[in-house]
Image 1: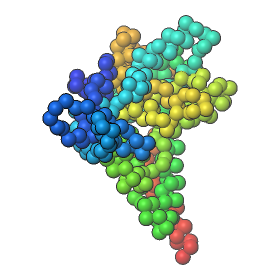
Image 2: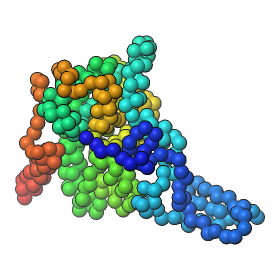
Image 3: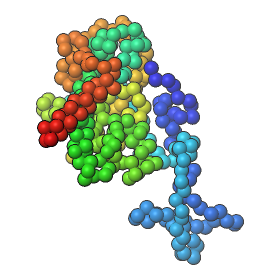
Length: 338
């Protein structure tokens, strides 16, 4: 299970984000002078900062360099709007939607929960259950709360890895024409993506894979294909992802994954393994005591009552399998050409 964060790194009652209560400690570098300051800061369209003096004169300000330590000590870059998005990423929000469904049947949303295999494994270890047994009991628990479908993100992980394979082959074949085709770096970890964007920018971004993470791949499938198959609009589906990592909350809130036409996010809410445990505790339920239910076969890698597995000890083993296949395809093609 995920460990608890210190009180300094908490947003209200969540254990995973910094409280947005401070201004940025280093927005720009301003030379301090004696006397009362009457200067104003003006931001131009290109993002440049200017100090406007009392006489109307302007002086361009030097942008301050912020280190990782500065970021850890400051939360000023989280705006009020972003803090609202983060507060929506909690199990309390899921409870609100489920209660709203019971109170207003006319405005009922179809609630879909996608569970990652990592979170399922964490809960299985905690309750000393098998992975498949945990999946069946989680399905029963969520549906008992009012959830309509419970899927397994191993399905979307396969999609994500296959798309990564396709992109790697394309990049490998174009490496002579594109100097930034290789190496291809993972795009599945939102913490890494945020770090790369803020610290290295265009130096590293061209090397990052354009493939969606399994979470967002599932978001696209649920709000797209699933909603269409059910005769629903994306807005009528409330999609929850159960993930092992707190950064997945921020990933779901990114504007990249907002459906402008439908005015909804692909993943409406992300809860962690620890929050699922908290839900069980609030309902006074132990997962070991929950009666198992059949697994939903749609968007789930299941066969009968069990989850399908692959050769390898984890996602790394499957990744090795996928890219070994890609290598055989690449070098097989080169051998045929020669």
